[in-house]
Image (tube, rainbow, N blue to C red; front, side, top):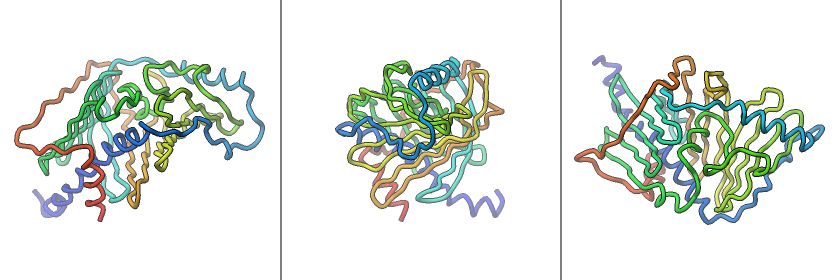
Length: 293
């Protein structure tokens, strides 16, 4: 190993924060929404110019939904960049089975240092350098919040969705917009949490997702660099941001769209590691705050 790599290796101790950040973004936003009492009205104050008619908006929503092709699995190389509370980046691979699992592997010098997996009933995270792992059932972690694996996959690919196994249909949304951009605000969320998608009217691509719990600051996902694959458009770059107290968590996911492998039978499994210390959901944000200082 070169002298430069020996100097860089201790910095890998902060890479666990990348996985912890992603888990925290999922856990904190969903848990805070369980008992929220926010409205689903959305905020269209930034829209200017001529207002689009409901007929136009419904046609655009149907067109958006039709553009989302079906897929069974995908394997995509990526770069994950933590922007806040620390700045660091690492490469890896995202492997997903549609509506079944999401697996993220992070590697350094060819060695896996951390991984994250979401299945239909559980969520896991593993940080090898500190021999830590996280494992919780989806039902216990979300407390009835109706998010599905498919919803997480759509979030990562930059596709609008309705929580649960609900079709993206005009009857289930509030639509509003202008020739610049338009919004989709799904209705009927059991937890009362509000979430709104903003779509560029000229391009038809998703610009952002804003999740607004009643008692916490918004969680946002911003989408850029759209690619067109065999399954339709998807975002190659996603910036996730969540503010909590004095700590802002911000991580950017950059997919290598040219090397994406669609519908090849890619699968991943999870097994509980031996000799590792298990951490709980309540410990995640404490660890993030401690490492940020």
